[in-house]
Length: 82
Image (cartoon, rainbow, N blue to C red):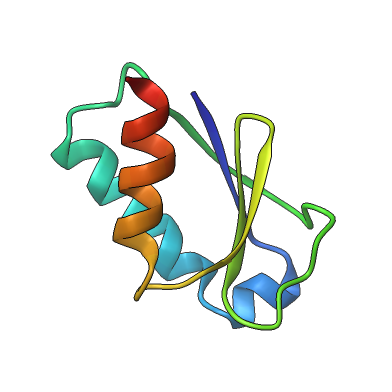
């Protein structure tokens, strides 16, 4: 699975560093280092008024925040790996 977190200027201001750190920690906690490739990207093509954009494989997810991160991780990452 490939996960890219947007680090463009807009997403950076909305917390992309924090989302990247949460993603790294969740990947390590679930021991998914051999199944998930985490990277950074500039502008994934969709702007969100709230939160950060991510791309998981071919799906762009907008509005990722610390508040909804765990649910997105459960649904999209753990659910996608099953």
